[in-house]
Image (cartoon, rainbow, N blue to C red; front, side, top):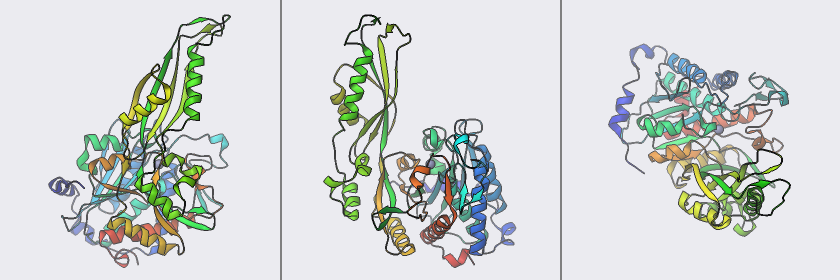
Length: 453
Ligand SMILES: [Zn+2]
């Protein structure tokens, strides 16, 4: 782990206005049941703010969070990487400056909806069938609501954590984080440098046969987006040939789809599969993307007139790299698969990230989760996709995906991410809220009953 620039953090802490006399009057514990209600209310309010990205307009969410935090005496910093693309960061300083801060992280943008295919208003925040409905209810305004509620509760209770607490609610995750986490890490690292980060994608029930697991994300793959171009002589559509750009790229796409990249079992996946009792060679298809770099053609373009053989065809390839791999190694592997002829151009890339599962925080998450659902096991996990964690990890943070929700076996949770009828089961979220609050408070050195009555 890297060293932390404590002077910078102390300087930021001073940005908070007068946490003293003015607030002391309002110091109070909050009854747990009202905390639950407040958190669900925050979630519904956030869902009603349309932060669909594009265009984003995360300022709506930042202003809501700032008002709630401000009401408790926490003054957040809001920085916009572009107009309306607001990132909010708030702090509660700790009393032990030798301990690295904990950052609770969320993104406030959401993916677009096909409203006609929804059973309810995607931006209504309605409660029905035991769920809060709406875009972002899972991904990830629920965690944003929990983070907000916890910061407010800690501040109102007037307790000082042993390590600093940072709340980050940022823009643009759903479009690659250019105006959110990535921008903050590159342009304003002093705002988001933390020792530990709790972010999305982990802590919900995974059913395997009769057994229940709670995957805790400790690693995520990197990405390399590549444009592959083929050029070949153009011609007349009435004169068929086998060596056209279209035929060639079709052949290459077939080759990429049929031939997976080299399989390798990283130490993390060896451990994950061992905890599940699955021999690596018998890993089911769910695990395939965690056991290799992958490449998936996602866009193909060629041709402009029905009777002209085009001289060029291109495809976009969505490449994903395992922890321990890099862009160069991936490109060499891709080149082996497609041969020397096509032009390969990297459009964008970001490295993979992996945090150790042998930390005090991971052990705390594991113990608390297993106690909250007796018989289940919490296990370290690799996400094939990408989250903001990969950027925060570049500043030296240990990053985990932990936004716990207890699910019924019949709940199609995974398919609701970015899906139609996205909804959060309230009972499962409140179970997760209790677990999450317990973990966060303990890691901050605060007793549960100091904050909640
Ligand atoms: Zn998300």
